[in-house]
Structure formats: structure tokens, C-alpha cells
Length: 358
Ligand code: MRU
Image (cartoon, rainbow, N blue to C red; front, side):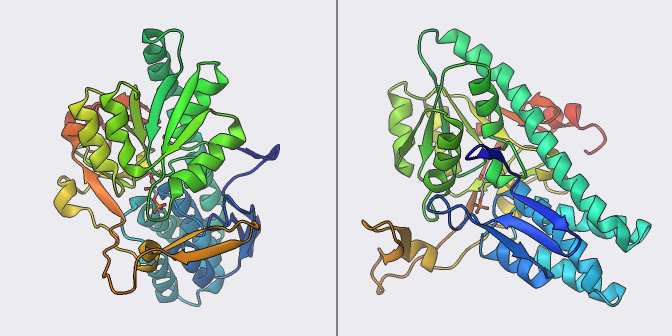
């Protein structure tokens, strides 16, 4: 996508020893690129969420493995560096998927295969999101035709935009495609506490692309649905089981419940790298990341002079729990928008699109 008219991906390798990323911790206050030269630096960037979003951390880890082959002195070293990357964040399966794909490729093709494999992971991630955009476009075209004369109101949670992938985005793929096709769209952007990826990242992305949107507090979605102000919900996912249960940013489940209660279609958009074919019970089996208390107790922003600053918003005496993700059961999901098309969130539906996998 473009930033101030210049096309960017979220992560790339300008040379064999460097991984370059957009530092998402600085957005929307500053657009800054940073360079990573070691696996430890890549792991820290993922852990500290300089890069975040399932597809983006998968691609970043794949590039990290291209640095790992330069650092490793033995096969055991390489395994340890791979484990270091995988351990950074537990919920998004794209991370382990990309690292394991690299380990297999390197075992069969030698260390020189690591960089082209990382490029392939990144290219396929971008291509999958572009295809998700086209499949989702048909869905939005149909819905828009049912509501002539007004914009289609889409609610999204967190950031499943191009910043969460290499390019295009999953939940935003159909939105950008519809906007480009001239379909009037308006997006309700959940703030997404505690890190505010909705307002800070999705809001920024949509503004860059000129897509009309409104930021809302996380708890406003149910009210909007009760008043007919949401035509559909589209979110991304960090891990989807083979039966269609979907882990995504904390709060997604509550949106799905409200959507079901109000007859609003609820879609999850994901590339196939987000499926975990080994799991069938999302609530019991998907590992849910718990992050540090400071994300909840403190808020980042800019002060009146435009200077970035951090403010304590929860008193020191109150203990906090910071669950990063929740699981939306398949029964609450209207459909999965994938790079191969849209399917029901069920084992049968998924198997029809991915017969080789389940
Ligand atoms: O904690 P984050 O910012 O990495 O969480 C991101 C999300 O929950 C996204 O919605 C998710 O990764 C799906 S889109 C890749």
C-alpha cells in the first residue's frame, strides 16, 4: 500500500544481512523504518510488537530465518534460533508455520534457500490478501446492492489491515477492493484496547487510503448493531482450527455474540497460513497470549504540543490481567473469506476449499 504516495510493504530485506520493517509502535504519530541485523533483534521486534499481526510476524520470522542461517554454526544452532523466534508470541500460528517451513526448506535446499523462501512467504502472503480482497468484494457488492443510496457499514476489530500482513490486509482487503470499485463504504473502527491497534493502525491505514471511517470505543459495537448501523462485521484471525473456531484480538468474541443477537453477518478473513490443521477445539486448544501489565495500566499518545508520551491510567494498587486474544466459536461465524473463496466456518466447508489439508 502507499504511504504519502510511496508503495511499501511492512517487511522486506534490502540486502542479505538486513531486515527492514515499519516500526508499528510509532504509528500513527511517526512513520519510521528500522533495520534488524540479528535473530535476537528480529525476535525482540516481534515480542515488543514493532511488527505485529499474524501475517506480518510470520513473514518477519521467515526473514529472521534468512539471518539465522548466517548466524548458525551448526544444525543445533539453527534449531535454537528457530525456537527463539517461535517463542516470541504464542497465539498467531503463522509465526511457527513460517519458521517450520524455513527449517524444512533449509534441510532440503541448504542455507542459501532461506532468503528466497522468505521472499516467497512474503509474496504469497501479499497475494493471498489480494485474493481475499477480490472474494470479499463480491460479498460486499451483493450486500451494497441490498442497501442502495447509502454507504455499506462495516465494523472491524483490531488491525487486520496491510500492517498486519505484508500488504493489502485480510479484513481490509475486501474494504480496499470495494472502495477502489466505487462502492460506498463506511468502516466502524473499534479502538481495541489495550494497545489501540484499531484507532492507531486501522484508522491510520483507512485515512491513508481515503476510506471513510469512524473510531468507536470497544464496547459501542453492540449498540450500533441494535440500531441497524452495522451491515456486516469482518475481522482477521490469528489461528483458525480445522473446524472453524477462530482466535483473534481480545473482544472479537463479544462482537460475534452481538452480531448473532442482531442478525448481522460476521465474517473472518484469513489466508491459509492462519489455519492450524492440527486443532479441532479452539477454546481448549488455542494458546492465548497474556502480555505485560503495562499495556493495560498505561496509555500512549501525544500531548498538546505533539510530543509522544505515556500516561498511567490505572492506579498502581489495582492488579490487572492482560489477555491478548479470545476464541470465537465456529457456530457464531457466518463465513471464512480465504484466498480460495468464501466457505462456511465448519470442517466440511473448510475441507471443500482445502481438500489436501484436512
Ligand atoms: O496483538 P496483535 O496486534 O498482533 O493482534 C493482531 C490481531 O489480532 C489481528 O486481528 C490478527 O493478527 C488478524 S490479522 C493478521
